[in-house]
Image 1 (cartoon, rainbow, N blue to C red):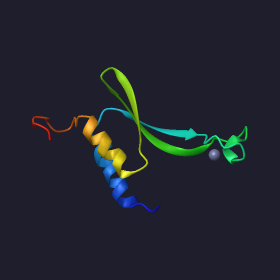
Image 2 (image 1 turned 90 degrees about the horizontal axis):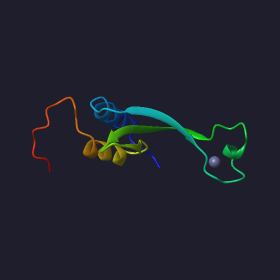
Image 3 (image 1 turned 30 degrees about the vertical axis):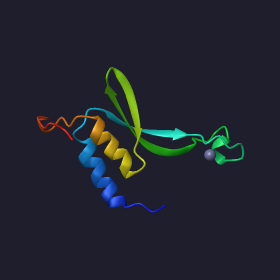
Length: 89
Ligand SMILES: [Zn+2]
């Protein structure tokens, strides 16, 4: 599935630069027994970028795999760079 990578990169930097949280690179295993990730010395699939942030005293993690993920981050995490005096929506 092709994605517009430059747009994705731009969205990522503009969204994440202004939000409190951290980006982590996660490796995961898909669970298929015959996949390379099932080998003991395999890191798994990845790295997959995730954005980890705190909201309501809970830690949330958003997979940054597609543009929709950035929209989720934008909606859920207040932008700390500009004053948030808009009424929202
Ligand atoms: Zn796998």
